[in-house]
Image 1 (cartoon, helix red, strand yellow):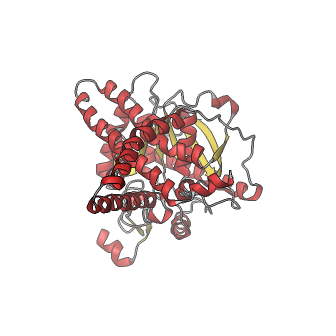
Image 2 (cartoon, helix red, strand yellow):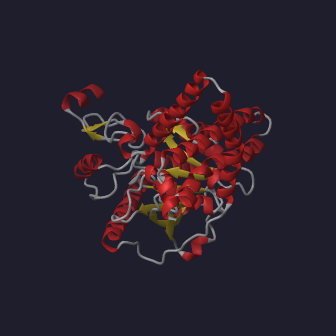
Image 3 (cartoon, one colour):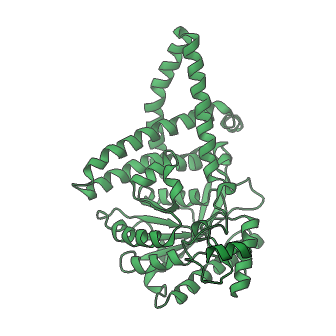
Length: 408
């Protein structure tokens, strides 16, 4: 076991994993592109096809986490709600504390058979991320420009369409209302806004953006049965919870708290009531996380959802499809190839390494949106004379006087 763990840290196995992911992803995205010819004639068939194609690609992430690194996720949920998971459309609301909190949600989605139907609310640039961003586009994730009037119309149309799925094909929409990943610098900016507006201060979460959430609650009511309010935590004494740790084969342990809230219980009588409810949920998240830091676990009894072998089998399929021709080519190349061909091959290896690093970079906290620069997604445009400055993803901050004047 020690030798196997040592091998996982070597560059060659990691490059092989990257090669399998990239080549299989290109195949999947090409098939998704071809499936677009079906869309005008039969959208439901298009969606069925792409749910399975998406799973064949995204399950490689859960394979890496579960089978390669041995990561485990403990789920804290009301026992009466367990049977509903994976059998209804849901909006999953999370805070963005870690680089890979989304991957922990994907592990559970895989175990409940929900992974192929997952979607995101994401910033516009994510659709251009090679492979995973392309797949999100073909599976109808929502990409926002952080321009409120444009995004308001987009969200309304999206909600009407997104729940129109074939029977027993359940969708899971992942929403991060904070609009960016957590850092101490962003926390300070968030706390400044909370003090200015009289909102409760938090230590582990950022102030959520309300406008997009409120619009989603109005549109999803009567179409999506429930919201899952999820909070992820990793022990402070464990390895760093990053995608790089997963690729290195380091086992992680995640604690995943999930509270199912029927959508009719979310107040929508006024925007103020709905916004206050959202802020209270994030204050509850903050208290939950604070309790976890003190006790090393959430309150309640954790349960382990059994692993399925489906993602392991899917990865094995892609390993055979992509590696058999690779090994044949490499053996031929170094037995009878020219120096030029060998150098081109080595350059391709370098390219795979660079692409892997760039894709890992997308998941890192430092790559998140700035908190408090030019956005209107959630809070909308500032009122005249307000100290808020518009920023990406609905971020707001205390504007400098000359900036506030320019915005007016």
